[in-house]
Each structure stands twice: as structure tokens, then as C-alpha cells.
Picture 1 (cartoon, rainbow, N blue to C red):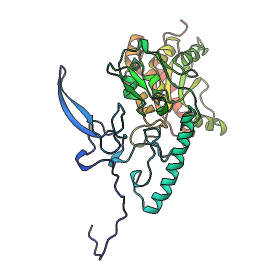
Picture 2: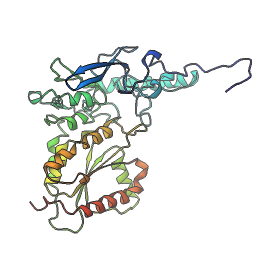
Picture 3: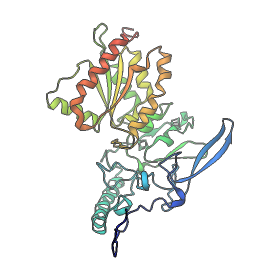
Picture 4: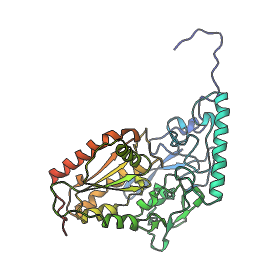
Length: 351
Ligand code: SF4
Ligand code: SF4
């Protein structure tokens, strides 16, 4: 674009200062800043991201800077929590958050400061900040059974967990948002909350009354409490009728889904399981940033469980739903039910 002008004034702060030019966003992991090194391993040459300290120099196992988005703006659920970053207690304001002028930046800074004060108040009382503001329970780790697989430390969306030299998770409770993603990640099932645990959800699944003989598939819905469950609620408030053969259990986030629940439900004779949660990907809406995406990746591994049970992978499906899409729910539920009808009843029914 060519403009004939005597003077051009550009607003200050149009670019974030999070990524200097030498550290372009990379393909290996777009979330973290660092350099990629190649390493010889028994599986051949692998690439590894070595995070580098640039401005914050945090001591987090996940790296010294905040996870970021395209152009280096800090990653966050900005729809609901405008100043939040993925490092609890650090709030972004001004042109670090997105391009803005000085006046906007000044009011932005006031908003971020108020959020920081709220965070200080709540964490000093042992309570969570957004989105489960006021929650006083924390994940508890039965570390004597830990195999140091590192899944919890890698998958925690907020970098709460560091590791000791052996790879055993070390918790920093004041960073925790209580999403339960670590609980879902742990193959040993040794991470639980006092009021939210693997056994608790398993017991709910086991207590569902599954009809022995029915023409219609009987389905379990694991549904996120943040957007999907309110969408179901909205469907009810609007008198929308939906398939009565679903039983719903609400989760803090789909990221907390432990694969043992899938095995529990299918071995009980439930015909199919639908996970309903927030949208993931570039325009994600997950209140815990990564939860629904992590659940989707975990579901990729569900095939192993289903193979063991000699069942079809299509019996488990994840659906992304925004809160304003509540009127789509009846069709989504019916389509899944129809698909299960084609597969036939779960052979474990009645045992
Ligand atoms: S509950 Fe969520 S935020 Fe807390 S440690 Fe587990 S994964 Fe991290
Ligand atoms: S996921 Fe479970 S077994 Fe693996 S490191 Fe964490 S606590 Fe240990």
C-alpha cells in the first residue's frame, strides 16, 4: 500500500514484546518460545524444543515464559476472562494482550490490576480463581504408586506441576485452577479431589440402571459443566425435547475424562458414550484452555480399550458445542443414537 502523506503516526504498542525476532513461533510447539534441537535417539533423530528465558524467566517445568498465541500474544480464554494468562497470578494488559492505544491500555491496566487483587485475596484463603472461583479442594496425589510417566506434568494447562529429578510431580497449589485434567491423564488413577474423583464418577456410572432389552440404544453423556451442561439446561428451559435414552454426568472439564470411565460404561452394557464439551483448536472456547483438546487426543487411544472389549470405536464420540448452540442438541443426540442402532446393541448388555 502506498500512501502520500507528510507524516504517518502509528499507535505505539502495536506489536507484542513476547517474542523477539530470533525466536519465531515454531512448528514443533507453537505454545512455547525456544529453539529446536535435534537429538539422536534409538528411534532415530527426534526434535526437541528447548525453552529459552526471554522476559519473565519463570521457573516452571513447562518453560520460562507464558504459552502464547499467534504473534506472541499470551494464550488465554479471553472471551470470559479478559486479563487471564495460563500462569495463575500473571495478568496481561495493554498491547501485550492485544493491539490497543494508550488510553485503552490505561483502562486495561486497571482491569488487570483488579483481577490480580482478586487472585491474591482468593489464593491467600486457599481458594481457586476463575473459572471455579472459591473452590477449596485440590488434586491429591497418591505418589507411592506413581510411575513417573509425566502425563500429568505435560498435560496440566496451567503449568501447576513441576517434576523432581526422577519425574515425580511436585505440586504448586496456588497455581491450580482445579480443572481435573491431571486426574484424567493419570493412567495409575492416583490423582483425585476429595469431592471429585475417579471412583466417584465410576460409581455414578455403575449405578445407572441400564435396561436389558430395549429397541433404542442406551447412552451415557459425559458433559462439561462450563458451556455444554448450561446448553443442555437452556434446551430444557426452552422446552426442547431430546432423546430420553441419554443419562448425563457433568464433569468440571472434558480434560478430566479418565479412560477407565469408558471401560466401566461399556462393560456395564451402555451402548455408546458421548463426550460433550467446548470447541477446541485455534478458536477454542474451553474454559481450561486445553481440556477439550486433551480429551480428544486421549480418545484417540480409546481404541485399545475397545479392542480389548471387542467393541467398535464408533461407540465413543466427542462433540464440540458452544453454549448458544443448544437448539442443535436434539439432532446431535439423535444422530448418535441412530449410528449406534446400526452397530447393534452392546454385547455386554445383561451381564
Ligand atoms: S487440577 Fe488442573 S490446574 Fe490443577 S494441577 Fe490438575 S491439571 Fe493442573
Ligand atoms: S500421571 Fe500419574 S503416574 Fe504419571 S507422573 Fe503423574 S501422578 Fe505419576
